[in-house]
Length: 427
Image 1 (tube, rainbow, N blue to C red):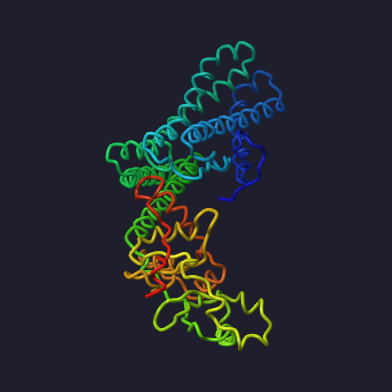
Image 2: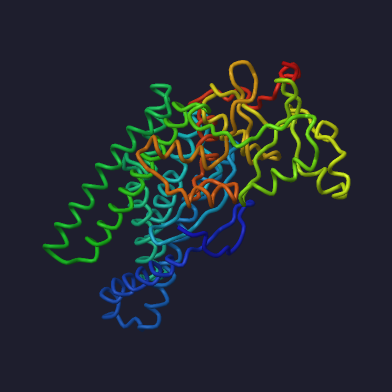
């Protein structure tokens, strides 16, 4: 689902409208107009007034949906979780958060806040329907309809299956009971898949029997739920792959070795012979010992006439200036190090058991080995394009997956920044 158009900001949270929202707004207005016309047209209510009240009812219904999502958002903010946006779309509304809560109790609070707001609105509206009807029968009908719909919204969202709030509540409760967020996700995903299949099956039966629009809506909700269950299953598989795989499984060797006594002319010949794309690292050795690393800064700074006289060892940097990681580290740590806030890297130097360079690691290689674990093979051109861009292929958000694993306590954060020890260059 796209971002949509931003209308305003509420407590620093952007409110967005997806184009599909206008479809459901039109359908809801039409449905309310037909409902009010059947009840009030015979009483002499003008057709334009009925359309106006129907539109107001549809808009207020989505104000209720917005308040529902604001309930989630305020609760998330109270748990220290940043809310990126609230988007109204075809199936209602969704609040996009930066990460999940790190505690089951916090996740339970955030999940329950939305239905609590809807139940409060339902009680307030249903309780005031008689007063509204005393002022105007049409106003009373509108208030009663909104109160009923908020009650339905709350009860529907409390169904115990993802992606509904009830599924999130079930997930948090299982997480609290077992101490495992992963177990909670598995249980809530399974119940969500069952409810979605039930909705699709029931909607299909109703469609064949009556051909009602409501049956199509039920099928649409079921398909949406099945898609969400599939996404949750894929997320769990990604997390498990990042936990099981190590850096050694994904490492390649995108570095070359150059003698410390070589000239800058030798360096330039190597660079000229390289294919297009990110250049290999050039590590410097002398007598079998690692000395440092050299880049193209000297070639760019010095005139060509000096290249034969200048030595590589005069322009190299220490090896510990490169971001590095041990080859036995879990792959999720490499993902976090590549996307560390404020200091992202395009490549990591992989260190063997003795702390010496044994390979390199880049984002496309991580994606390739993770997808291979899931039974997906990426074509080489796609991997090469991702390598040139320094990104994950297919827009894979592995950094978000890894951060979620740490935030939930699924893995211990620990130190994810490994550097070469000073003595490693002297071996």
